[in-house]
Each structure stands twice: as C-alpha cells, then as structure tokens.
Image (cartoon, rainbow, N blue to C red; front, side):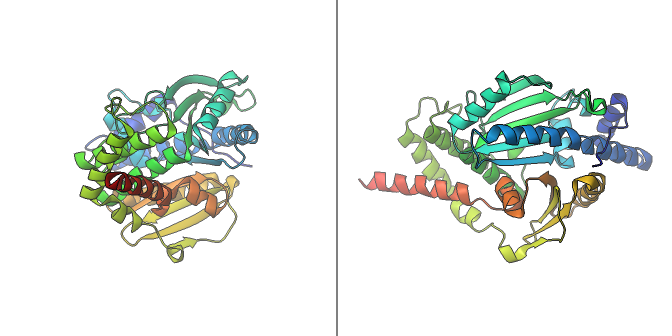
Length: 351
C-alpha cells in the first residue's frame, strides 16, 4: 500500500500558504504553492487511515450504527482560514486531515470522547473544543479533538495534526443544512459570513436542537423557554421560506453518476448549477493520483465554475451520502426535524 510522504520543510509549507493568500503572485510562485499544498495535504492520508481504524474499533462497543468518515480539507476552506485568522500558518493548521464520527445521542458522543481521553494513546492530544458545553454563537455544536501524530514505525508523518469531530445525527443535520444553504446562496455561512437573516435563522435552529438534546443553550438563548425559541424559529422560517427552499434542493438519484471501480477514497464533485453529482473512486494505493485529480477540480472552481469537490473515505456510496449529505444537497434529516418543530408550534398556537 502506497501513501504520500511529506517532502517539504515547514518553512516551505508556510511560504506556500503565504502565496495562496497573496493578491499578486508570479506563475512560478503559483505553481510552487499548488505543488506544496497538494503534497502536504495528501501526506495526511496515512495518519488519517490509522486513526480511522482506531475510531471504528472504539465505536463497535459504543454505537455500531455510527457513521465514520474522513476527508482532506478543501483548498478554498484552507485559503479562507488562512485569511480569516491573523498569524495563521499553513504548517500549523490543525484540521487539514479530518475524521468524523456521527452517533445517535449526546450520551454516546460523551462516551466516545471519554474513551479517547482515558485510553493510552501514542498520539498527543494537543487541544480540544467542547461545543456542547460551550456552543458557538452561530448554533454549531459538537466535540473537536486535535491530535499530533506520533508513530515510531512511520516517523515521516510525526507532527502532522488531525482533527476528530464527534457529533450526534441532529448536530450533523444542522451543519449539513448550513453548508447546503451556503452553497446555493453563495455565502460562507459555515465560516460565520453571509446575510444576517440567514445566520440568525441557523442560530435559532441550533438553539432549538440544543433544547431538544438538553445541552447547554446556544449563546443568546440562555433565558428563552422552548416555546419562545420555537416562536422565533417559526417566524424566521416563515420569512425566509426555509422548508420550501431546502426541500427543493436534493439531487435526484438519476443525477448522480458513480464511475466504475473500487475505492478506499472517493472524489465527490457537486455541480450546483446543473444539480449533478459525480463520484470517482480511487484505491488507497492511488491516493496521490486522487489528490492530483482533487487539485485539478479545485482549480476549475477557482476559475469560476460552480462546482465543489471533496476527497473523502466513508465506505459505500450510501455511506458517503450519509456522511457528506451537503455534497448531494440532501437536508432531509434537518427538514424533517424542522417540520416537526414548526407543526408542533402551530398546534400549540391553536390550543
């Protein structure tokens, strides 16, 4: 099995990051930055693969129906993060390689988190963020654990950072809806940007889901009753017609093209203008080829085409859809929950 190894120094990696966000660069600098980023990102494939095996083993006794996925961070997301945070350097970015576990309940989120914290693990837990205890203002909730990879049997990868996200299905449904709506609005809602009315809606929706799951209230909703949250959600949904918009987004099965072949990795490409999805599989041994194909599509995105791509590993195609529904414009879980809350509120108003 062949994995990409990092071949650039931290200084070169950081230089590439600086070029990626510069206003004007030469063609040679541009090519250098693309080459360094492609290698550095692909090098996270080996650490992710070993982490995924551990994650699946832990989930067998915690939630055997959990969804597990891994991804290499998209170039537009990397560039946006470099621009948003002063002093951020590419070599220090902690979530270029990411894994996600989606479980059925908050209790199982905590059980999996505890399993990582108390187990003897050769990799260093360098930071963690508990967005269940301290939700973000935008409504985001979940657990993030950041590890620094360390393996005497594979020293080439020592020091690379990986992020493990642990979410419930409801938390994942909320995040999917944010990304899907952001795609169609052309707004980076996921990064806290975009129109106030849409950011407010998702903050209220996050507060409603936190209320259902009995976790810490989203900031700004600490003193609100369930009824008050539902009233605000109802009013915001009516104004923006969120259910109508999201219900019409999902890509029909006949608009999804899956190329032939077996793959440990899948390159998912969403064309939001034509409402099509293409899934191209790559064996694990061809990760470098997959990474180059990923970079080629991202170059098309940068040139203005309405396409988005992500290189992931989550098993069969149906598992891909569950782990990354935003790339299929699939917000059914969020829509069903929102509809229940709206219907319940309507009934309470009549009584």
